[in-house]
Image 1 (cartoon, rainbow, N blue to C red):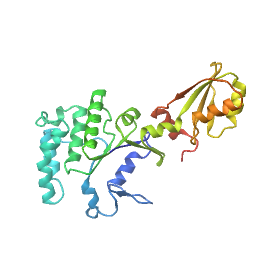
Image 2 (cartoon, one colour):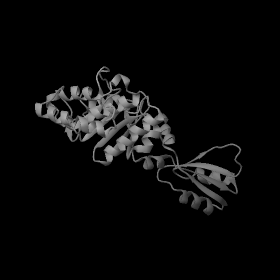
Image 3 (cartoon, one colour):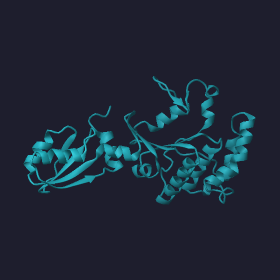
Image 4 (cartoon, rainbow, N blue to C red):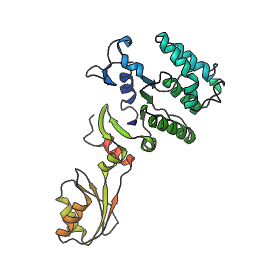
Length: 284
């Protein structure tokens, strides 16, 4: 599965990730990763051996090649058996991220996208069950973003759970199976992108009597009329709380209002995102 952790800058995404990997600890509450609590010293966090992470921009020795950098990180920590296993995986992770041909090139000559892919390769050295990536497409051009998106989709399809934080709505919608929206440190919504879009479904209705239609719709639960000056016989209505277009149509017809057309409008993830992080009921 590929999970998108979405929120504006400053929402708390990186802080949440740092707590998930044991770099910082919450002042209250608890954190669990892979079914185990994250607390205490690193030696007491066995679940983190099954986690690979890239937090913010990855750091490498620019005068070493991509392969040498990965070998240095593979030797850096952990039991001897784990170090040997990571060293053996260096060629495989370079292949996975598409850096086989650039493996002998110094990292100082890498593009931003190549460095990001090398960072993902580093996070994959331990063959993790869970891969956590903080803004992996940050600073990339469209081609670099596409490369990362294809790579993460492939990893998820091959069985790795990929957790990606981002503030780029289009990227999240394009690649993620499930999305959580963070605002002011609180998770305000979660679900598949298609499910979240239903939170802001709306319809445009052509009616014979706009004044009467407004009166009828004003008495319906889960219906909000959005004024659009200059559109004549058309009304735009936002639906919520499970209210359907069929229910709106039925109410209007029952009240004697002629309905000439009813056109569903599916909200974009951007519409949903803005309504979730800027709404009056968002925790501050």
